[in-house]
Length: 283
Image (cartoon, rainbow, N blue to C red; front, side):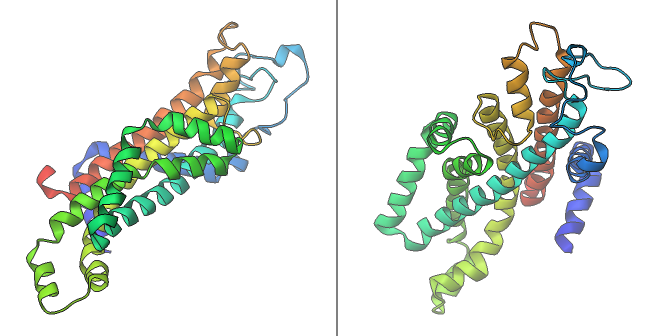
């Protein structure tokens, strides 16, 4: 409860953070109530006529239709579900793996700890997107394979951040006193290290969610998204691959692009507020 109060007070002092929260809540509400908000079935053509192919925005179709005569607004609303789901799930797994690796590297120390950090450094210098593309291409395009790819290769920055924080915490007086009275390392990790590292992990999670949403959109744009689900990246892939630019159908390209920027911007603005709470010196 105290943390929530601090978060709310920080939001009230930061207009950009409050704007990020509003943007995020709007996206979440749109995803949750998609069946009631979408005016049409996003998977079914409105009418099977040539006139409905890339029909411009009108009172009947506020964002026009795509190359299959499907309502773009309905697809946009349902597309928020996939982007947010991948962002939340992939980031949760990524932050858990990164946090565990960072803590274990200090906990075990020695050769094992050094080996964990060298592996982290190796993955850290390799570009993520090529690894995502290779893994999803090998496993097959599906939403869970996309989440798996992001989780397996996106944990390195969190691991490095947590490890650096743990190294600074182990020299604090309360940790040294706990070790002096015979407290075991598992006890120190559970009672002292994890509670102090957790806020750093939560702040990092806001950034990881943004990166996960961008990664899913990029993979879907390259044709590696789940073909059975509608996402903003898939909408962009279909628009670019099926002649939306050549016919000037901007309404098939602009909405999903705005949706991606919308959610990523919301999490980025919230991340500033969370970082301010975690590190009061930034206030």
